[in-house]
Length: 302
Image (tube, rainbow, N blue to C red; front, side, top):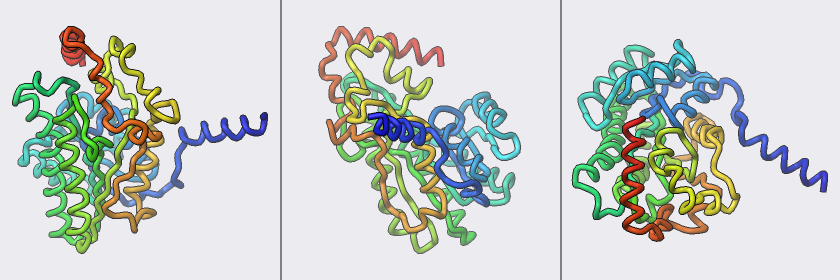
């Protein structure tokens, strides 16, 4: 029993540690959208540790500057960019190239989401998610792709999707719709643009708690109704380093033969119950009214 426990504890400690050897991303210049907070920031930190130079973008300059100061002033380039606007995306690509001399990697991580009965959403609310996730990913991929093709630069694109991109899920219909489109784009361009030396892959994360987005999606008041750990066969949520390890591998040359793949990292959650938010059927109309007020209050604070 002691031996078994010893092996278990060793495994537990490994997933919080760096997976790749030092210098694995040396010479890489990677743009991470939504890279100033949450999972994006965790990926950026690890990319830099492995030798990459990273541009981070978002709409809040103070968050980007804070992240750059925390990670590396020398190796992290913060640039304000609304990925929904193609002209801003074009300007960002030029700024990154001017700053670092080149660009050969893109992580489409910027996202937006609402948990709500679909009939309660306005057209504008639906559009916000579609525009950030699908249109934003398209804008960045197209602008970077054209730059790489014109300059004959081998490159790698990593899209952050979700398991309900292929299953669908109630109560997050705009996100499911947008992520499904990003997944289709990933697989389509993996074939079409491989001839230019580009690889396109995706990661579908399960529950990975992040401050801000997590609080907006799952206010504490929802905890009695929703226990995400119980939905995961491994009975835990993900650790940021686990996702950063996978992202770094897919952006590195170690994965040079991986193209058009979507890798699920969710502890088996979607296999246990497809549709991550379908359990919210149990929430009453009165409870939805209450939860909407909480979510809006949290959005104003963030």
